[in-house]
Image 1: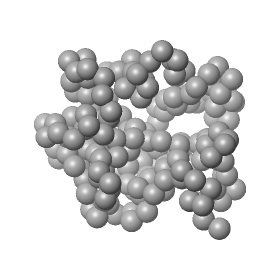
Image 2: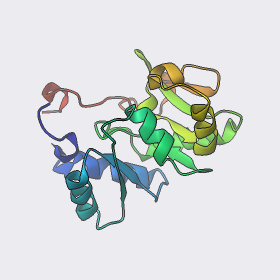
Image 3: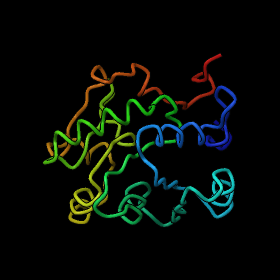
Image 4: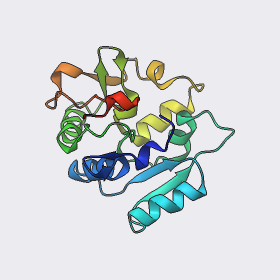
Length: 175
């Protein structure tokens, strides 16, 4: 869209603020934000008064695969969410948490839209995810999560009908 999505405003709030609020409302207090460089890292830390940790993406990495593989804590339930998904709210996050608790044999819960898996909105047991990632070659996350290791959550099952909406183009913003 030509600018940093994290700083874009929706209802007079930056997207990064909305997403962090959603995570907190969903029950997550330790929040890690993947950033492109130290400048963005400082900007994020200032916004949240150092209550959010940042991880700087490596230029020679395999993208989100390496971010997950090298920055996830071990033995925790982790919610992945992209900054352009402001409608994936606390209610949606809690819904994934409840489903994951009932499916402990699974690595995580992945929402599925009409277009397939949405791994940038998945909730996982980090140790289980890290174990299987360490034994796999890097691949697109959509392919990786399309397995029986993950509980699929059809978009029709989400309690928030707009949860999977994201902001990729200026026209995606409500007027």
